[in-house]
Structures are given as C-alpha cells and as structure tokens.
Length: 462
Image (tube, rainbow, N blue to C red; front, side, top):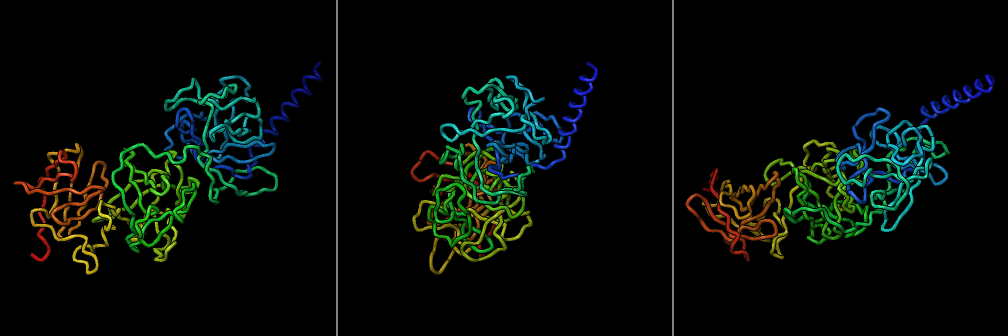
C-alpha cells in the first residue's frame, strides 16, 4: 500500500511539473477573432474585473471601454480555441478545472488544460455559445444579470440569451508560429469579416450635426471606399463630392464622446481589429459600442479640431499628409500636425452648398456661398432664452463663418447668408435685439432662441 501511495504521489508531482512547464510555453495559433465579446442579453462586454496581470482575476460584464475587454480568440486543435486577454496575455479559465454548474471563470496563465479550451458554437442570428471543452458547459452570465459587474461562470447550456455572445469581428490570418505549437498571437492585420447580426443598427443618441469631414492638410474629405456598405470597408481620403460616402452623422454618446456614422452604410468609424497602436487602419464596422468606435473632438483653433479615439487615445491621421485621392486615414500618436486637424462641413439645406470652403466662402469668385454679416452679428454670443434647452455659444466672424459650441464641447461650423444662419441641418431667420439677436428655425416658428453678446469683433475692413 505504501508503494502505491508513493507512486500516486510521484504521478501527481510529475503532472504538476508538466502543468508548470505548460505555464512557461507560449500560446501560438491563428487569431480567428480580435476585439470585444458582447453579451446578447446584456449588450455589455466580457472583461476582467480589474486590469491586473495576476492569475485568478475574475471575469465580469463591463462597459466595453478599455483593454480589460479586448480578447484574441486563438485556434488550437480539435476545433477548440483559447480566449486570450490582449492586455495581460492570460487566458479564460474555469476555476480549478471544475465541471460544476456555477464554477467561476477567471484569467489564468496558459497551461493547455481542458479548463482553458473552448469551442465556439454558432447559433441563430450570428450569435455564438462558448463551451468549455473540459466540462461541456457554457460561458454564462450569472443569474441572467444585465448589470455592470455581473460575474461570468459556467453553466449547463440552455440556449438562453445570457449564454449567447457576439464577436464583433473576425479575421483570417495565421499569427506567429503556425507549426503546431500554441502561443499568444499578435494583432490581426487583415480586413475582418463581421458576424454581428445587428448590421445597420445605429448607436443610440441624438445627431449633433451632419456633413463632410475635411482635412486641413489637403481640403479633401473622409470617404468610405467605393461607397461600400460592408463591414471592414476602408476609410480613406478623396476629393470632396458630397456623396453619401462622404456624409457622416455625428452622434452624441454622452460624456463628451461621439460616434461617426456613415450615411452610405449606417456603420461607424472604427479602428481595425480594436488595435491601439499607431498606424492602425481606420475602417467602418457595425455599431457594437467598442471603445474604438467612440471618439472625442478637441478644438485646435477656429473651426478645426483633432479627432481622438477613446479606445486608444490616438488621433485620426491622414497618412503622411498625402494629397492624393485614396491616401490612407489611420490613427497615430497625437502631434498637432495639420494632417491631424479636421473640420466638420455641415451639409445644410441648400443643395448647392458643399460646406465652408477653407476660408474662401466669403467673396469667392466662383461660388458666393456666404456674405459679410451685419455688425450686430459679429462677435461671440451665448444663448440665454433657449428653445433647445442646451448650452449653446456662437462665434460669428466677419467673413461669414459661424461656429457653434454645443453641450459637451462639440463644435459645428456653419455660415451666414441672406439674413439667415445656416447651421447643422437647419437654417435660422435672424432678428436684432437690444443685447444681441434672436434666431427662429425656418419651418419651426416656435423654436426661438435669443443670444446675448459676450464679445464684439469689428467687421473686416472697418
């Protein structure tokens, strides 16, 4: 009996050494998905409870806002995958290799065990279930919760929506060593193919304004290549033509963040593969609320802003300030160059208007889009009797350029012409008042807003 115990103990020791050897090995294979894993029932992301490289950090539902919810799904063998957190390099693991319902799911160093192997099973509507190879049970949101912080466990597969997930994009490229070993993959660099069934669904929120996005470096526009409606379609620079491939809705997401929605496709501006590195390509994808689909506009100077990606902190960048049609638009470290400065050109209601034309709208020889406003309109104004019940400040310049600053710091460019202000998708009649002026939206006589002057600017040439 003693001999048997000794042999058993030795077997356990050897097994333990093999597991530890597995810890030291890299996980290599083909990344079939990079990005967020979004719960169908909750519409929240699978993420680590804390941004820590420690083993045992539990997995929960989160707001899709940082690298804790950024995953690579890496092919192994036997139609199995490992689910790797891109921030920590650790894998999704069933605690203790348990086969019990309710066992916690955590991050752990790769050791090849069944508790770290999963099967991706396609379901109706483009959803998937993630099934533990070790237990045969499904990744499950505990208690069918839809709350932030709800824990992820394993549970017998029921087909309920708390066990259904969407992978917002997939790729098809072998990353790293494909010789049969398993290792942490690199970044997918091929155009992804969407499996998200919510194609065409827009982000919730009001449209702040609609128009073209002009580069300060070239005066050309941000364009969806070939007016494509496909996920992964490239976004590049093209001569401005005001077609639907160049018209963007700027949607308020709250917290001073916005989404850019292409009118041609109803899809949003995003960074390919959720990549956070400089030179990552900018493309269009179906809305999934990933951090790389959130942007901020930060004012540079009159009418120009830099557009900063919330997920990466990088700036929308025209590669090399190239002037040719088809020049790539990507993200890059913010440096203040003119190839990172952009202006939203409001489309307006006049079919012949194509936006503020690089300061040449006033008195342009070929197209007189705007005219010098009267002296009482020139300067800075603040709304005080406001139909729209929002914080609005207007700067009206002597060359007819109008810049509105809205709630959250968003800026809208417009112009003055024929005793009317053109701003966003609307035009406004103007009437002088003792302390400033009043606007009334054309077609909406009840939408009267008064503005008081806070700064005066002498009209040009006076």
